[in-house]
Image 1 (cartoon, rainbow, N blue to C red):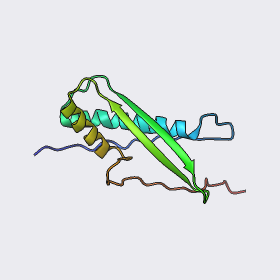
Image 2: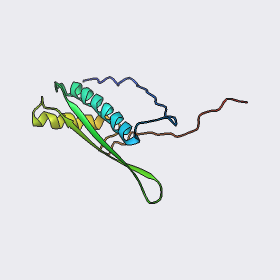
Image 3: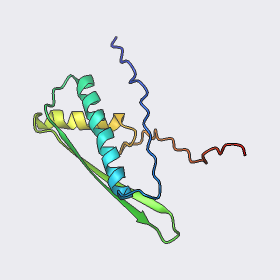
Image 4: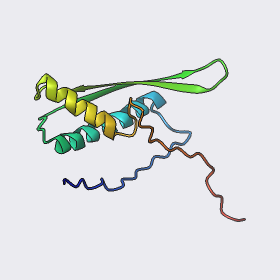
Length: 121
């Protein structure tokens, strides 16, 4: 029986202040592209594929609804010219299953919003 070792927990952080310059949809697209790029690499290893050089393109659109809430639409495209069509489909399907922002029904996103603790005065 094959044993798949879990990926170590990776944690990153970002802080935005009033001086922020990048558009939220640009940052969102860049973050998702990086995450999917890593999922492609992990999926290739799991499937024993050698994709060669590949590229991930992500478009992120943030929209404001009539009630003031935001929604987001993401379109991710993966270019893997080094694989035949069958292996490209296998690779992309496995990467989509692995990354937390899947287009499937895996639902593995946990988001918490809270306040920064202020030091006692």
